[in-house]
Image 1 (tube, helix red, strand yellow):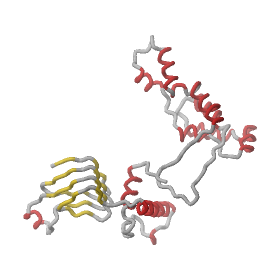
Image 2 (cartoon, helix red, strand yellow):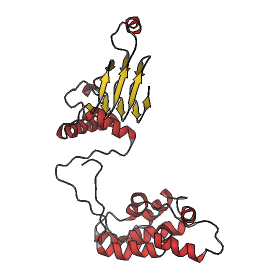
Image 3 (cartoon, one colour):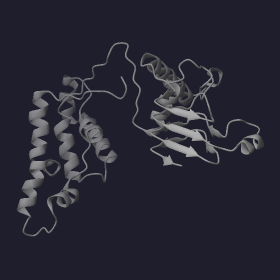
Image 4 (cartoon, one colour):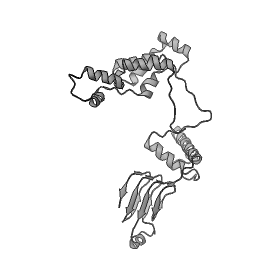
Length: 259
């Protein structure tokens, strides 16, 4: 999977935990709760509903607040933890999120959600690639489209010595595997003229043209008057360069128009 997953709350936790929170402590995070609060304060409040919501709504997140409060122990050990062994975990949760939400809200979230157990279902033999950041997306495209070129790599096999390098090497291999299975290509719906493009660069839905004079080309000892460096990505770009084009390494160019 590529950054895919399903979080499902079973009926008991949905009804007894999420809906109870939505009606009470987290009412300011729901449309219904905000409308009630807005109407109750309408005489004293000069803001419209949108600005009122921006000022009153709490930034409660599914992963860091709600899911992190759920127990990962067995049902029996969760029950026994209520006798005192869970106090340390509760304290760590409060310390981790200190200042993000009101203390009472954090306590209510933890006390409500920790009564339930988190279960994870993994796909047998499955692999996972996360594309949540620009860096991850660029690595995925540059390595994923270079599955047939082992020379395009940031870390040589013999130089892989520490945990961080090993993790990056494994990520590259997964990207290459995904790229091959999904038939990713380095050029898609693009036209490139008079430009040297590094084999690792990716160009999508773009028109790139250099129109240097013959004199300029001779001056630089090349018939090419443009250059795109390694690990760079260009998308949705339309450029006609009169005096050369030089895009360095590890660049992301998106939506650029110019003549």
